[in-house]
Image (cartoon, rainbow, N blue to C red):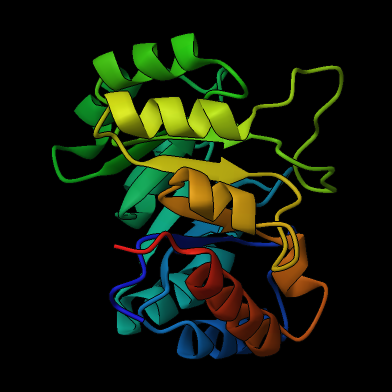
Length: 215
């Protein structure tokens, strides 16, 4: 799978205790060469509890050479010495995150359906930008926000080298247009964790390969 241009970026469910480390291991084994990033996304926990839950998951990611990204919290990412942080529009500036986390940190920024926000993030030093939600999603609150389009993906990848992550309700059945448009990453959560994670990752691999533009 190493020649597949579009890769998977897994986002954790909110509950990552109990059997989740084993599930993550299964998903990463099934997605070897396809899954290259994992985002630790928990809500309403103090930093100590979040760090306790993160530790085994971070170790699993390291074993499988998958980047471990912390959602929202620069302080938690710094405490864990995570590979990076993903920032929403209200979670701080990429430049400040860079100062805290260092030159090697991978910093991503949510840009919803705005090329302008994405360009600003790139100018501020973001390593990747994220557009979404592309489809109805239980983890990505769309609200009344504008829906991004595949035309936006095509325009971005044509004009900029900063990797593009697509997010929001993405499944093996609906991902083809995003792959065809040139998305660098499909960020997925519910599609994987609400089913058999290894099986669904395998379905993503087949769907991405089938949709991949011929070189």
